[in-house]
Image 1 (tube, rainbow, N blue to C red):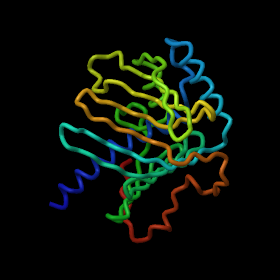
Image 2 (image 1 turned 90 degrees about the vertical axis):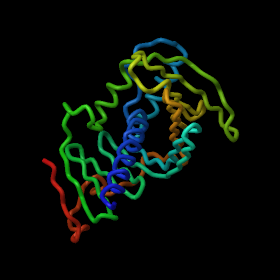
Image 3 (image 1 turned 180 degrees about the horizontal axis):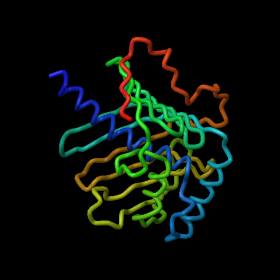
Image 4 (image 1 turned 45 degrees about the vertical axis):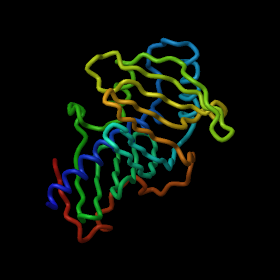
Amino acid sequence: MKVKIQEINNNSITNMTKKCFQFAVVLLLSFTSIQAQDKKAKDLLNEVTSKIKSYDNIVIDFKYSLNNAKENINQDSKGNVTMKGNQYVLNFMGVTKIFDGQKTYTIVPEDEEVTISKVNEKDDNAITPSKMLTFFNSGYKYTMDIVQNVKGRKIQYIKLVPTSGKDQRKEILLGVDVQTKHIYNLIETGKNGTKTTLTVNSFKTNQPLSKNQFTFVASKYPKYYINKLD
């Protein structure tokens, strides 16, 4: 029974992590190569790109929500991610993921285990900044959508619609704060009715980071089992 529960938890963390990285990489790499389909949307995305590139690093606290009314699913989680270049540290659902630019270190305190794996660009399931950039650069058309007032903030949404009929996602809405040009939230709606939302609770930039911010230090986990996949 413990194994089954572990498998379910790992699958949930993997799926949610992928969505978190989609969101995080959009922030890091933006949409500089997406073909223009809506000039206003393109201009706004270019402003977001310019703003994001001006920062040395970004630290985000976020809320993750998954909802499916038909299946009576309603889940909320919180997390945070620190990003600099293609390096990151993600804390989500009790698990920490560190990517130092070459290897990913997945730290699970509950199991006292660390899994170390190299990034394989040929792996379709690999979560890498470059792959996420490619993901958003092709297979989508986008247009300006609605504007909402969120606690005094003007949020302009941009709709991304998959061009492939095989894609299980119906659409993605990217909310941008018109004043700051920061991304406020990312809403993904599946064809099965599932809606996942990532909302930024705190967006900090150019923070003082330690030299070992993106370095895995094995001595901090003396009793942990180290699982090297490569």
